[in-house]
Amino acid sequence: MTSRVGFGYDSHTFGARRPLRLAGVEIPHESGLTGHSDGDALAHAVTDALLGAAALGDIGQLFPDTDPRWQGADSLALLADVRQRVRAAGLRIVNVDATVITQRPKLAPHVPTMRARLAETLGIALAQVSVKAKTNEGMDAVGRGEGLQVFAVAALAGE
Image 1 (spheres, helix red, strand yellow):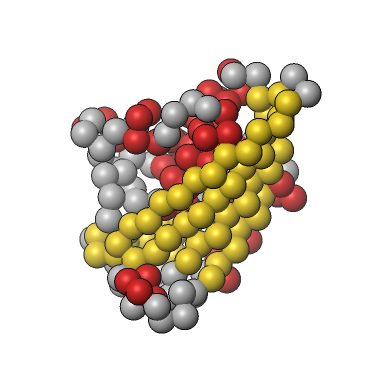
Image 2: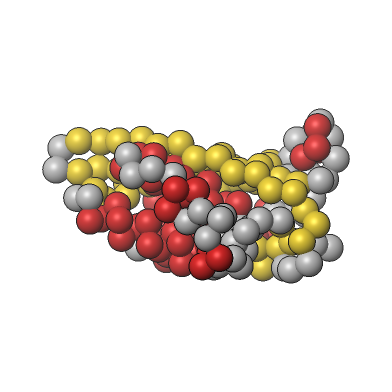
């Protein structure tokens, strides 16, 4: 049996005139995240972590922002597509761990729902998904509330 680990990262600025969504969960905030799709940086980082672990490229290769098909796309649908690609490669998701860094809004009340949405989309148990929320203690653009960053790792297993 083989095991693989992948790392994902994404960041977006605030300022889009749409709801803020992380892992498909709408979070009250004065603006949404910029981006070609729906700007869901948490789903994007997890997507890249899975793609990296499976050596299947990255989110920009599969869903380029130069392709109008992905304009405003639901990032959980993109994540579900990647889940199928991972399975087609003969791999299964062992776990996903993500950290969202933003000064505001406060994400702790939304973490259980974000975990549940990711687990559902990935077809894995809730116990296999971790989401943590941190601030940047006022440092840099994230600390000034201009955007957010997400780091994610994923572990896969195969025959």
